[in-house]
Length: 263
Ligand code: 6PG
Image 1 (cartoon, rainbow, N blue to C red):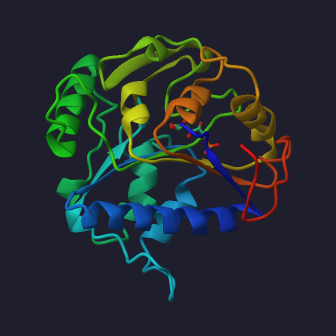
Image 2 (spheres, helix red, strand yellow):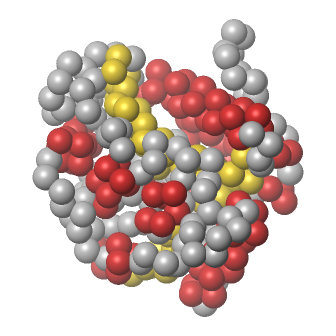
């Protein structure tokens, strides 16, 4: 793998616009290949603007057409153990920003039922659903999603793959419950096999608090237990990092707005 393509934008708005174009291109590529567009959505706050933009028609002159939501399956990279109406719900955030504002058939949105009592059963059912919808004939392989949208925490976590947690050791299951001691909570997360097999991974990273961890992930030594994002950045099939100038502040190389920096 040639390493991630890193693009630095002046601000979150510019990053978000470029991310929307990337999502639409990935959807068009899937359509052209005769596949349903299978995408895993990120939680957190950074992607909210992206989801809002995807609910709108593409800007005039945009190369990629609007997403054909009737031929799409929307999954989640992780979910908190809360009901969908809880303010912390990743599904709730995406519902308010996108699902409630775009013509997406509800059957094409696949919520992880974080509020359930038996999280292991939820994880296993989600794996079955992923395999059914994303269609991988080889049961020993994770299905190849067309796109995984990810964020990165200031501690280098992504999805709910947090440093030092058991989810980092999962090399077979596609979705697992995980105890996140530092947050005193449990989460459900897709695992490395899914993210490493995705045709494209798009990291959206903004804010000065991400500068040090982004540099460590991109330019530092391998530290897979401490920097889970690094495992995907270095091992993914095709990884793009869209970051704002603040998050790129510690990166070496020549970073300029909308430019490609060394990686
Ligand atoms: C979550 C996300 C998580 C998020 C990062 C970055 O459920 O919170 O999956 O991995 O992407 O924590 O969050 P921000 O976008 O809010 O900085």
